[in-house]
Length: 331
Image (spheres, rainbow, N blue to C red):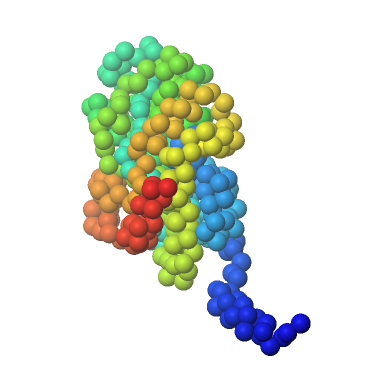
């Protein structure tokens, strides 16, 4: 064997190997989604099951934490560094001095419908009735109050609101007669109508700007590990693309996490979110402004708050300006 001839080739190979970036193990984190109902939380489930977190260098353990308030609380408590939540919960936390900020929003209109027992024929019939709501500060609780105000009712004086829990629990309470009305998202609306519970107020038609669901973290994490935030949002944005373009695969993921097997129910949930989820999921400043205006009725601090302190758009803007998002949709 002529080693003199092999030497230049071996040298080239060694130079190539040395030029490669060092192997970096995927960063382990816990993250959380806040709803098992097919829809906006499906994006995080897609990021996990389609291995998009892994693709972008994150070894994510994805857990369920019920409701937007608990989602934000888990970030404040340091239980997860980054995950899902909702606008009212963020605003409450910030007003109380909590270190949490919105990075993205995948549903930026109020996506709720007020549904009721069939005996309720007119808006006025809701007066004096019991409504099923979620815990204070959740998006569902906010939506129910907004819906009642839109039809001229005072949520506190004209109705009796009872804390029930998540969307599925509220529908069960409606069926059992524990409550006479509640609010649901698109998937819940389809289910309610099939069960004979009509829509009393269509808040989607009103196109009310609102931070329904998004991704949140602490300013501390942004400061100390911006690369993790950047990779997380890259996976998240790609999961939105996957949601919109891999319908049948997404149905499988929806079935897995929701345990709902009704094809029509899944179709309606997928259609609604595919329509409303933006390709570039900026956290909606006008939606946060609406939340703060509502809170200002009881909390003077909300009237003085600057909405710019509540959102950080730099990472989504980077993905948009770099062409990453456009490239996804050219596939």
